Amino acid sequence: MRQRESYASFPSTESLRHPQGPDLSAVNWTPLSASGTTNSLWRGVLGDSTYVLRVNADGSRSYGADRDREAAVLSAIQGFDWAPRVYLNAPDRGWLLMADHGGPRPTVTAQQWLSVLNQWQDIQDIPIFSYQALIAQYRVDLPQTTALLALVQDMTDTLQRLPDPSACLVHHDVHPGNLVADDPLTGHPWRVIDWEYGGRGCPWLDVAAIQGYWPLSMDDVMTLPLAQGYTPERLQEILADAAHFNALLTAAWEAVRAQPDIQSDL
View (cartoon, one colour):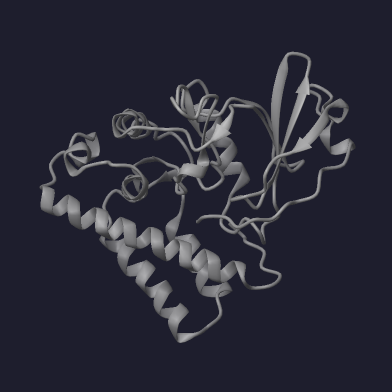
């Protein structure tokens, strides 16, 4: 569910006033690059603190995102060294205030990812990401062409083959652009951002996504708690289905985004 380039307007001064936080309207905000996101990102300095303000895109441009589910996920992962530090999350006002964790695309090793995945598989007390509801919404919102109807059916069939559909924390959009670090060359510490599609779901989707960008071998995968009891051959099948499902999600997301005036109910 990779996002395209776009930039939402800066929120009103009144929207940035929050009883539990600093007066963000007094900060001099500088826009960050819009590459890879439909939200808009702004960096600001207030005293000794450097903030990043994410202004949420509307439902038509962040199709499938759920701000309340994301808020629950962000709350659950606070304190982990791979999680963004959230100061204030105001989905009703349309923004999220985080610490500035540095630049994108840090160097990360397979062993570092294994440690993170192990921790993600222990996080289960979060809202479920309903793939069935998302697919049902795609059936309604996508153009009723033969190719797209076949795509939605393929999503349904592939999902049925995937085990552990609601096992633990899943990011659902893992790629190098969603990693940041103060020092990209060393990658210490590095953090995973952009949790608007996060929820309790099928962990194999994240494992397959990580394999597509980082050298996560089958031997590495077999050390994960969720992989215990599976043969290497079965794991290969699961990861192939997971990678295919990820590709279908991306294709459906891009197709629905091409439609005017789509408002996601998810």
